Image (tube, rainbow, N blue to C red; front, side, top):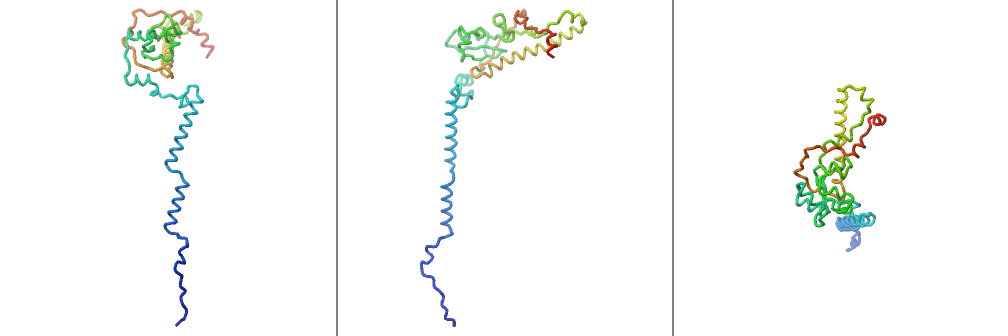
Length: 248
């Protein structure tokens, strides 16, 4: 029989040996959680960046806006109130009350049947303002012709004449009556398109303005029996056909 004896391990000999089981895994997880970012940390960073951006915007922009000049419509109290109350339908007589003479009422003007609130600029549209004559009425014709005093009406009949070229007598003699008629019809169609572009331009000006906003429509507008004659200033704006040819 072999007399070799098995070497016995003293009790507690491996007690201080590092363990590779669960305790090590738990420690590594705890270490990773300390080194990483939690959801709360991310929210804090995002909120800090937003607040910093808003503060910088308020400081840098002359409009004192916290959104870098952008101002949503629902942050403007008059616009929000009108939205909640719904659009207005005003007759010409009702619209006339909002001409800036009554300080308790807003200032309205209309173009192409749409009513806009221009109360934010009382120095221009209020009583004594340079363009006060536009308020309390639909003066679409004046916006196109530039005859502010004579054309304070919505009636656009005959306005296209100001965009129709003036022919020279020598050139007209070379055309037959049929050719003259065709040319005039073509000129009138193009001129009416120019009128509509002008009207749309001014309507978009008020609709897209940062200070003004649409409040409703004018109802009950009547067309006068007699067509208004084109004002002198608009007549002088008519282009000469010869100059149009040179431009092409």
